[in-house]
Figure 1 (cartoon, rainbow, N blue to C red):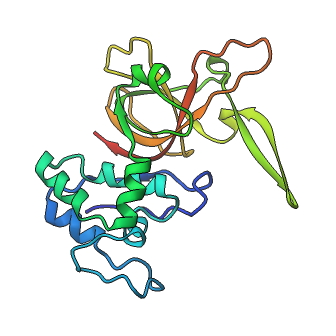
Figure 2 (cartoon, rainbow, N blue to C red):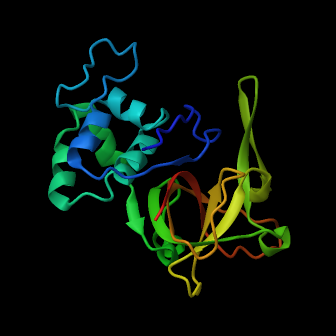
Length: 224
């Protein structure tokens, strides 16, 4: 049975959710054409058009970028023709959002070289948990709001997330990418996982070597 995401609107605070791709086009479209939230009075379930509100509801709430990640993750197992029909089922606003935020799918070894900050990315590979903080010194910028003023403080990525290196295959040869996940969700060694998230610029303390340009802040995963 598919586990429905229940993320919060603030994607930084939302927990990473498991997505089990739909096996049939009918199942996917039924889940997406859901009527949205109760307050979306002009959105109807089963009208053969997936609105912005309906796609957001299926994704568990949050931004248009997050909805685009979910949309691609949910249809990974479908053929090209079925995926094309799913795209055509998107309403005008949902289609515009998807075209703007559609994630790229790349190998873990390609993330640092070909990625861009704030880009939606899907990667599949073999994760290795970095248990020892001495293995990884990457930093992130954390927004701090005080009244109407927002400042940024640089903190270790470990302070907010569990950190994994993800490799192309079980040989675990570099280059690899860094994926930041919700704490407490464990991934077995040598078992492939598909992650979907937003690339963030990797920061580094002064006089510290930065081994990666980005980290992937993961919002969804599928145990491949």
